[in-house]
Image (cartoon, rainbow, N blue to C red; front, side, top):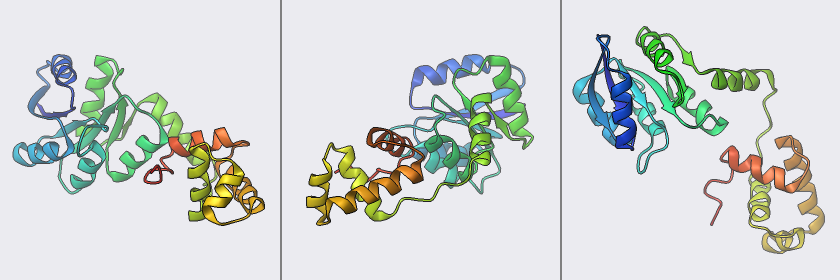
Length: 207
């Protein structure tokens, strides 16, 4: 029997998962509603597999995965999100697998068995995204000044306003933006801002 801990901030979701996991193969030995609570519960009950949501109030699933890296349990992410800013950090933090919440019951059961055996488990959408990351060349990171420019652009500032705020010329602003477009693989301001938000590049610069 595989011992499980369910981590999700929504009680209805946890109840639904309990129902889906009603099987002689599984035993739900604990639940948690945050990353901190997850670490405490896992430490107390030592499950085989943790079903981990990522975005939760307070401490999130990613921080919990990092803190459980040295624990013998396997962490199987079960979330609604499959963006780069969610998938890649979770895998790098130590998650054994990554599934979406629309995964059918039978597939979830198979994934849990696989995870318990130490096998990597990825939903088709996530596998496709990771494959695309491998095939595409790594993009050069944005410099601090380029991020400053992009953060102001994201607030709706014109090139002139950006130049005044950063004490640089409009020509320099345009040059920075051209570099940003090239690095993000886009061709205009709106796309640059959208991609930057998707990748979490403007986090902490939104004041």
